[in-house]
Amino acid sequence: MPTITCDSCRCQHPIGCNDLDWESKALEGKEDSMESTIEHHASLKMNCRVCRKKMKATFTCKEDPQNVIETTDHEAVGCIVSGNISPPSVR
Ligand SMILES: [Zn+2]
Image 1 (cartoon, helix red, strand yellow):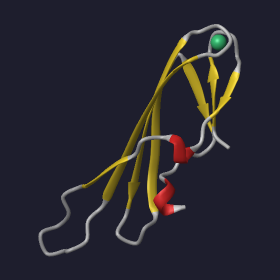
Image 2 (cartoon, rainbow, N blue to C red; image 1 turned 180 degrees about the horizontal axis):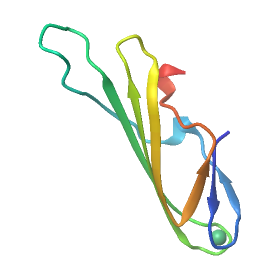
Image 3 (tube, protein in one colour; image 1 turned 45 degrees about the vertical axis):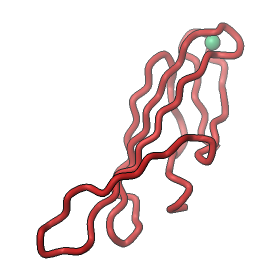
């Protein structure tokens, strides 16, 4: 299970991909194609349960027309993200 680690006290907090609020949007594809890449986006805000530090993370995954995740990326503030985050629909 993916975890986010507080970068103050190193406490680990498990996160479930299903618990994230995913938003999906189709990116513009080529004009002659009916298929397009879908971008999935989710963000997470929480306080460390030990030291109450504010932690924030955003996740971006791109899914190609064959339902394959192309890239996953994240930005984290106040925490470290480990593990693979992917939208529930493509697992
Ligand atoms: Zn902490």
